[in-house]
Image 1 (cartoon, rainbow, N blue to C red):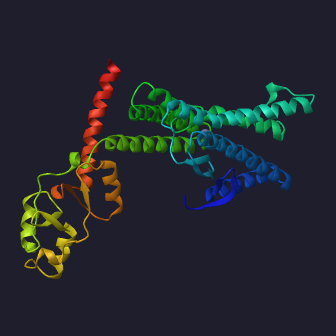
Image 2: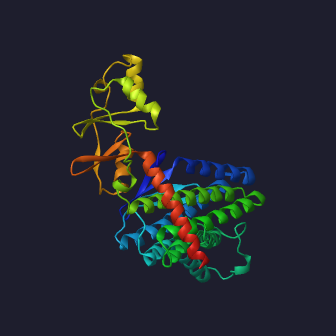
Image 3: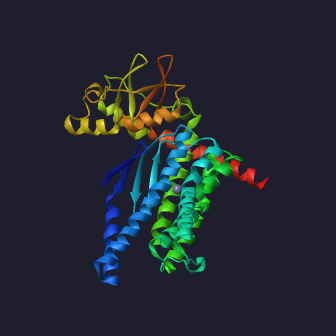
Length: 367
Ligand code: ZN
């Protein structure tokens, strides 16, 4: 993430802090200055926020270290004004493991709260639980309350928050991972709407959290959708088999005819059935501007071509299409060109598979 700085390294995991976090610190400091009017109030307010975020780091470490037990590494933990994010390589596929990883974070906050409570009960003689609140109470009392709030709040079933992950994992024991993600994301977005509404009425900070949950849920849902659509599909399933080809000796005017006659934009250029280049619409337009329509395709085609085997997984083909700066990948079977594939083909396949999955999911729920 841009605009973040490394501040520490704990158990082999780098801790980063995002620039916007400093805005929060300044804002807290200023508001304590305005209310308290002295430096002591500012120091008290800012050190409370720092202690709170130390608890957030421990919460994220809870996730990270539990994930490590299942062989999943965590690259870094980033602190944002709305909380922490542990950037894990992946989530465990096993639902029980995912639940353990998700619960480990809130569990850390409960343990901190319990430890403070034990400390307070031996060190002070006058402790009244019913008087605890965020507005009053000592530094430690407030820290205890805030840890309980953190734990409970994170356990709300608002995907991608911890409680939402528990929900997704529990659902995926009874349905496909993708279906469970879509459902958990819907519950998360419903929750985000309520949070946003409560935020409008009582606390604007909740609106940020709601936005974060909403966007996070949508992003997780669509990534999972794409992954599951492409997981078992092959290049052969998405390729275009009905397409026009050019020869290097064809003129650009012939390419214009083909472009205007159909919907194809990019043309493979073949010599004896073997692909030697690609003429994209951009290439064609550049050639027309520079030299006119009587010039040959060979002068303007791209010679750097990418090809995939008909059985190659679509997940890999998509990854290549996104990194190769090419608009088209040729699909071959026994070295012979059998189809072409571009981003549009893959997106079409995803849309179709999504529709089929939703149909299946609905019938499953009605039954
Ligand atoms: Zn968490």
